[in-house]
Length: 633
Image (cartoon, rainbow, N blue to C red; front, side, top):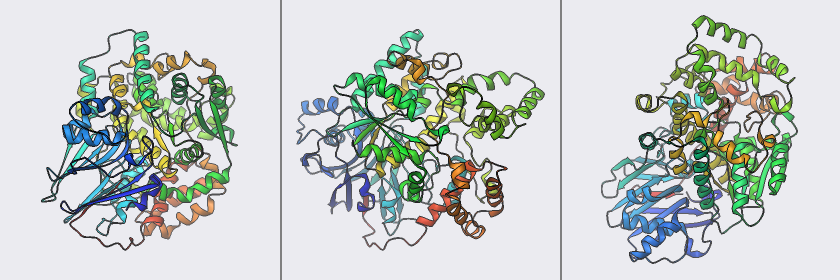
């Protein structure tokens, strides 16, 4: 199991507790305390407690003196040893509440005969588990669990339906019936005597929002900028602790540029920054990143991606992402991680800025157009929708291409076509439509879809603002399911640790104290981050239409990817996979003929088919005792 995830760290360790009947295996990517004192699994001095800890506890230096004051001795200076002693002293629940960072860890306590699994508040680090009969196993990736002979292998059809809609499989489910993901902010406790388990929450986003709303921010917009900057600087400073080389991803957008600008101020040498560029002009943001890097004085590296570089990664995606996953930015994310790993072992990212500070186009629409149109007659909304869809996306894009580069939105026609159907929907259904790709997965697969919008009644009561409700849903679903899954798998496949200061839980909680009128101003989101960045970088260097981390997939599918896609989308393969072939084949042929741009619907089908090709064969032949709880992080 440990060998299956060796990409997550070069150093291995294992521990057997025969009394408890538990194996713990660990792959270590040494970041803090690279000596043997930081090796895992790690045990307390009394030999009664053991831990394997994946991630970083950024406030370990603050907790250590408290533990030393009550008699705990330390062998080294790793954060893992602090977490181990914290769990031993305060108990797992209290220790988890005191931690600030990203983590998934297992704590074995021989005193209470319990094994506790803990996942960080926002879901930055993954944790899968299953229990069948008297076997219990868990791991950071499905690769580890598949090594266990009792690992369930039946495909969960409801998970397939959810994947076709969302491009990811949401917690707590996985692609397999019986394999679960521990949800963010939760603790699973396994009693070793009778193998019974219980799951409790030590933190919830809803609870954090309730606390924020009970203490709303009462200062001015300028006060909010100062407070946001103070919190963000503290978050970055904690994430600069490293005994190995450290750098940052720099796309040239507001989020990553703000992180890099503050890193540059906090450090004593130029920050190593990394970006990628494409020959395809519409998707190339490297020039913007280079201009900001030059202005800030970073040590910048741009990797020019040729089509063959990206295409060479695609066959590896099912292995890298381990269960079906279809956010197309998975390709450039892996490429930039691979580039960065040639120079550093840790990279800070700008992930979380949109969710925490109101930066997605849907937030702007909810605050503007959709809100205003909600008061207009249905006939007016229908007429506007008809105008928006009167031209195909490609024709709209041709018109928008007449605008200067800095004003030209990417994929404008596709966005208009996606916005048009929202005009006649309720707020709830608008959000569901926005996040959906296959809006009706039942066209492809016979399965009951699960509820995917959590806490609807509670958020309707608690959050009176539609932007806040969207931000809550983004943080509860899209962030852990898509963004953080993508970043973890892509960076870990390159043995690179990614850290996201904008997702410090204290900053996220604070962001809900601040009203939307501050977060979004003059039709622009992330107003607070813009003000922080504008103190350090001229606005003309970062003020441009929002764009994603995209790839020219539509062209690739008609060109170099066509043979690969054609084979996976054959009628026989689709049918054997339990999908209805007719709608997929029609979309594929329409895409090839140029009458439709089917890339966004075809890609999840292709990733599902490629995943099945990779992982639905026979499982490895491994024997073990069924009474063991087996782990690999």
